[in-house]
Length: 433
Image (cartoon, rainbow, N blue to C red):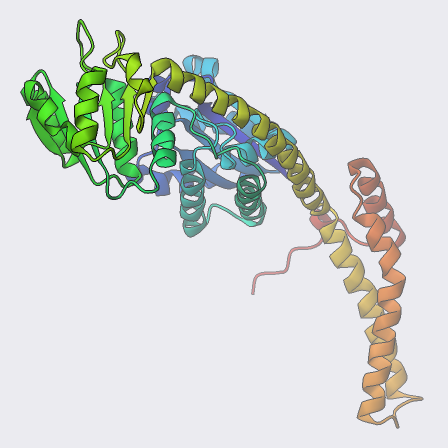
């Protein structure tokens, strides 16, 4: 019977966070939910993926229509969300579209930020937990592992994850280019704006040694410095600490420029003219644009960073097109494998039937006219008859493994009739003993 892969659920494209959080499966709920999932009569295998951006059930079934209804009810069960409200935000993928969707998710082509690496690790974790519970079988095992290899191929063959696409990450990307390494560098935050805070977190993730926080509200500076394991300083005292900073991020509310060329020139002298990277994330701007005329100073404002991030998004878009071509190729490869599963029982039965005839005739011959043969001669005769059977079956089995579903179904039916092979459901069940 033909197997189908389904994905039913919600994701960030159609469902707001308040819907996604109602449907999420926490750590304490997932294992039992997986058991409940495969207990549904149309569902043969199942994996639940529950992240901040998506709650999706991946299932293998032989009754797609019934399985879709069952999965929708499964997601809404326990009065977690009204069925009619869920239907507004629900996404359903079937067959090739389901396989394509899973591969795109694994390759981070369906993420909020294309190319982010976290989703692949999350998918591996959710698949692993389903496998440990026993809810993932042959089809989903192959499908998920194929998605992991697809993600690796996309990462290796495209630059889809290679460029920073947010203003904050673009700032850090520039810092990494200006300085050979960040491990011996210090950053200073002037003000505690959201984007400057995010840039500081990116710098920490890239190994920067320390962070100095200056804010007009000193309590806020203390709070932020505690988060960063950094040093808080009163805002009016920041000029005394500037020479210690290699990266200065400005997001302070101010009527005029906080940093001028004259002040930066003093800082450079105190630093023996070591490079200084200034990131102005404030509007109005904190740093005088004339600072850019100084040697060994690199000043970028919010528009510079936004333009760089947009360029990177455009480049990611071009790389994503290459990734989509890889996805299509891999979907077809997986689909050929899935399609061949329908022919497997017939191929196995055909081999068994022909080999049973071969063995019976060979044993009959060896017991009568050729009973004087040596063990070595018997082995040679066994090998020869096996080779003859394999050569005879090669062409029929090749036709049974058709890529075309209609032709495959025709050949399967013909083989069963020509060789008098029972349909699987027609075979008698063995008696209980």
